[in-house]
Image 1 (cartoon, helix red, strand yellow):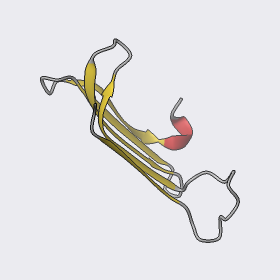
Image 2: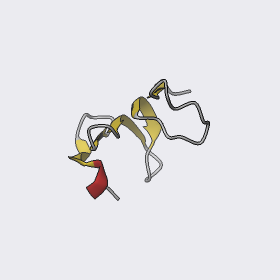
Image 3: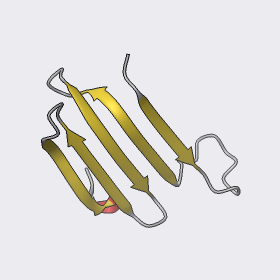
Image 4: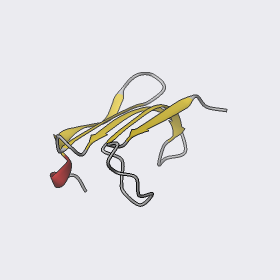
Length: 74
């Protein structure tokens, strides 16, 4: 079992279920694309058009380090 937390925040005016969250924070341990355990920190801020993702292996080596505008993120 892995520890992980995901927080989503919507503006009070967004009551429809299909509206995406304005802010998403995800942090914890996950299985990476290569099948190995990694540490993940991801922030998506739609209001500020910001995307940040840091993925580290079990030794703390950074595998992915993205800090960019959300509109430029693929």
